[in-house]
Length: 112
Length: 114
View 1 (spheres, chains in turn blue, purple):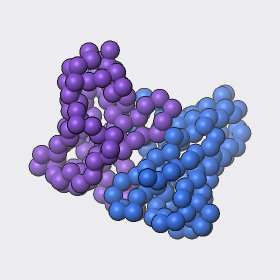
View 2 (tube, rainbow over the protein chains, first blue to last red):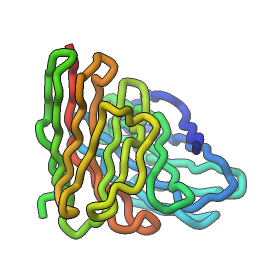
View 3 (cartoon, chains in turn orange, brown):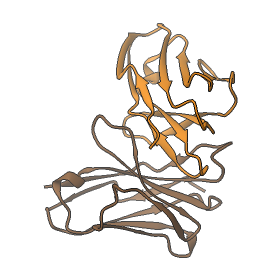
View 4 (cartoon, each protein chain N blue to C red):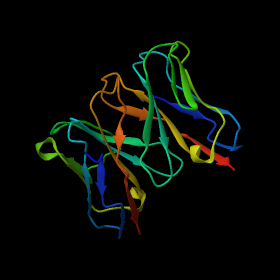
């Protein structure tokens, strides 16, 4: 069973603040890491799929980095906006390339 | 294609009743997944289909749970003799290739067992 840990559990920031979250996972037998954003009353939405050590991906004000040797990924949000308020989920692909194991998520609240 | 569709959005049922949920995936996706999410937890894997074949089932999926995907199109998840512990958000997702693309999730079905 894959153990995917996310921290912090929740975060409350002011509009304009930059923030980051951590996803930790077993470094052995790594295949891929996914980040999702889940806004209240909506479907979880895929942000990034990362496979290579040292990979860095960016989508607007959101970026993510990956360190497969030490087993962690960071998600950064630059200049947080209220519309960034959501739960951010990290997931790891299993050895059969078939399913994802999710962490518990980081709940972000951005106040105007 | 309008994405992954799940019905119903909400279901309230009495303990002991049977319930069935439906998921219509993206038509080009051959993989379909069911997950369950409870308060304070991330989505927990229940089962996975590739086309019409059910390839993996979690230990979370007791004998009261059954899933089907006839003809590799839509899928149903049935829970028999519901218990209060079954109250959760049931999420369906579909995908093509998990090394390049993520899951496309539906909006989920919120089950409340009273």
